[in-house]
Amino acid sequence: MTIGSSKKRQRVLPTSTPSSSSSSTTSSSTTTITTATTTTKPFFNDRNSGDVAIRLFFELSPFDSSPTTIPTSTSTSTNTNENSIYEGIQTQIYLHSHVLHRSKYFSALLSDRWQTQTLTQSQSQTQKPLKLNLGIPPTPTSLQSYRTVLQLLYTPDLSNSIDSVSTALDLLPIALKLLFEDLVKSCVTYLESVPWTEAEEQRVLSIVPLLKQDESQELLSRLSPPTEPEEMLHSLVSSAINKYPNMAFVKAFVAKLLRDYSTRDSAKRVLEAEFEKCIRVVKESLEDYSSPDFRGDHNETEAIQRLNLHKAMTNGKHLLWLIERMIELRVADFAVKAWSEQASFTADLQRAFQDGAWRNIVPGLPAVVLRCTSKLANAVAAGTILATKQIRKKLVKEWLPVLVVCKDNVSPMSPSNKSLYLELEETFLRIISTLPMSDSQELLQQCLSFSTRNVDDCPHLLTAFDTWFRRAARPSQTDDLC
Image (cartoon, rainbow, N blue to C red; front, top):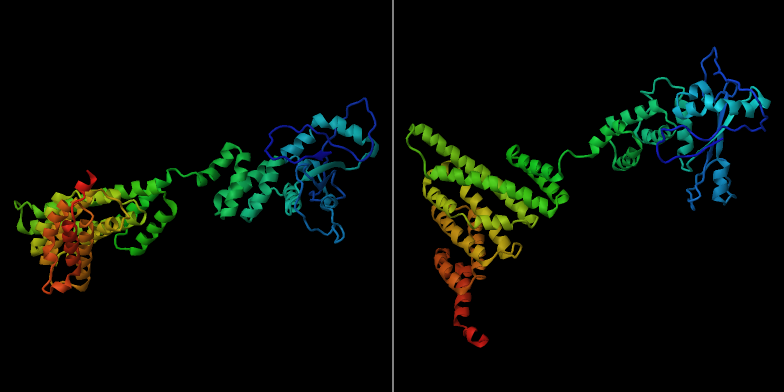
């Protein structure tokens, strides 16, 4: 009999019948075949005691026009016919029917409903093994894998029979086909317990549809996320900010994950949500610091003030990191708009920086706030963020006074701060040059503090005024358009 290969797991009785190598004779009586019992333990592939002989052979699919060549000892260098290579590869294995009953497939094949016909076909060859043909896929490992599965029928305890993911993946489809439930369970249990490579994961995905729901549940739980990837990214960003605030390498790693695994929309939503949280904390902290409640003990009030400044400093650093990520992923338009609408926040900053108490508590706070402003303003001036003229004007109008206060009150001025101030001055002047003449006229007058003792040392300011006066001297184009 030939047992065809199957691509799906079958939970039904086979409809084909065993065959004998000799011709059968007709018998009018029904005789029951009893399972052979032996006084000694049966062995795999024992020609002397085996009562079932299974021939394994490569079964070529009629749809396979170019099967994979499998080098074996039966093929010769002169044999150029691929089909003949497959036809020459076969092996016969002697097994015991009472052992085969461990497989539901063979148990059904050897059940009472087949015994009458089987005995009729074998009457002329009493004591000879029942012969079955089992077609297997023409792949390099299928012959050995089928032999292994049949041999494992003789192993009572299969818990230690699987030693690698590749072995489990090779044996599981065969165990499913032959309804060898013990082996199916062992393979699935092993796959649930060990890591997979990417290639092995693809093989698992191809096998999962063949499993019962309860068998595949644990495997699928590894492959089916409980939440959307966006929620995972949100948690990672939040952890990088709140749980590892002073670990730059953690933030760098999360930044890479954002670049590699987020869509533009998901990154935008995640970063905007965290941006809103951080800027709210900074604003509330500066507001509390600028308008303290002096009704309590003086020492307690001072401690609260220090705490407010530290909170503002910590969350200001978070804001700077978030702004850098938003600009990098080109999703900073929301941040620019929000940053330009901070009239009360910038007023609190000016009051705080005019008070010298912050110098001994958070000396780096002005630089952090101005770096956030500089990052966003540079993105606007460079065209990375396309902001409306209203937003561009408000961005300069609200944050220019903060820059002026910082220059006047931060001393001594370090080289890094001096470079930051100069960069922000140049950026503000570039944005001003994009505004209507009336707006640029208003804002340029507030930039006179950019001037230096030596006029030649502020070329960026000279260039900005030269541009304005050149445009002002040009004849109006309105009349020409009418």
